[in-house]
Length: 237
Image (cartoon, rainbow, N blue to C red; front, side):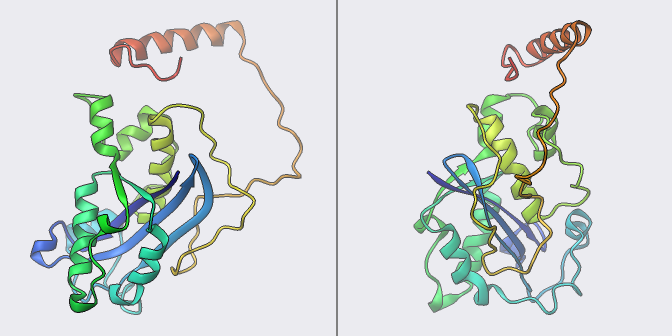
């Protein structure tokens, strides 16, 4: 199965109020493995960014002045996601904005996102799995021990990478986050410093340090705490 984990950043919260997409970030999974392929693009929205939104993602109006419009990049974007299952956290928000951008193309509009993809909402999945708990991306990172230390501000590509890790852990089963042998490729976006890293195949083997008896006992106590807090849904046993 080919999946694309997707996130967007926008000028505000409501496309009905004229807000637009300013960043799209996607990472590709095939067979539950990161392939190293990603799509990343900043977009000039032809409008001002709300101050509240700017505080969230840190993207400024000045930064976007020389970036392409959505009409210039939508074909490359659709080519990247075509035929995939999209994994999105709070999918109605991102799909609503993407469909709004496609409608603004007028006669050139190629349709809706669901004409090209199916969609899985990881927020709905998290709420079903962890009812009554916080299920924001940061909360899930804490719950599943996913490193989000670089996430001082929201960013579409970084958030997509983090969500990919969370999604693989949340959906269970054996996961493999190593990249394939193919070179990482960007689909039409600017070059980006991405958290996807290729491991050095020539480095020496890592030393295995086993837990001692005290550490194992403390680990068991922690698992028991998680058992109680999660209502028996501990994923770490």
